[in-house]
Amino acid sequence: MPRYVGIFNLPALMTCTPSDWCKENCYALQGRFLWKTIKEAHYRNYVKSLDPDFIWRMIQELRRRKSLLYIRVHISGDFYNADYVIQWAAIASAFPNIIFRTNTRRQDLIPLMKEAFPKNFVVRESIDITRKSMGIFPVAAIKGTPGSNKFFVCQDNCEKCNFSCWHNPNIHVVTSKIR
Image 1: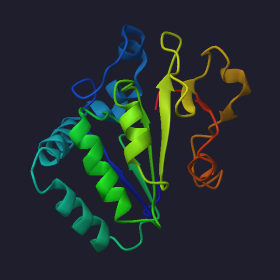
Image 2 (image 1 turned 30 degrees about the vertical axis):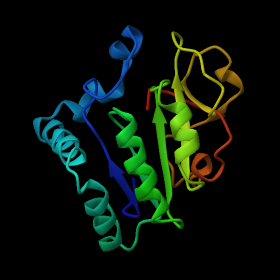
Image 3 (image 1 turned 45 degrees about the vertical axis):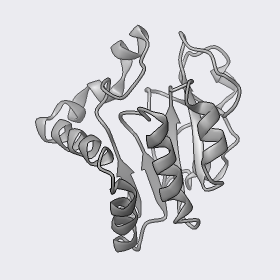
């Protein structure tokens, strides 16, 4: 991602609700995500997210990084409880000119996300061949998921497609890997 995109990740599996299929195919359990330094950074983020001043600290960090136009919440990991959803809603509300984006598998938290997240927070429900959508948010699916042949095809390069799925929050997206 370019420098004007901030990323906040959490540990894979620890904060996710993966199916067995997802565990076998998750990109966050492969490659650089297996490096000790990456795993430690994701765990540190998780610990920081538990801190009572997490919202304040994130707002301060985002204000410090004035060039940010986009924030990708959870390339790895997921929303682990309702309080954490509310925290991200507060953070995104403080930055109406930044687009926040996430994929989630937390079907139990999707209604809360719909209610709590401001308009600048794009959510896609992550589905696969084992998991159907709730129909509340557009979906992100891996190639081969039933119906995904009609979705917007991710080019795996946000700059190249001019952040199309970030600016078009209502489109379904298909990728070559789980994201």
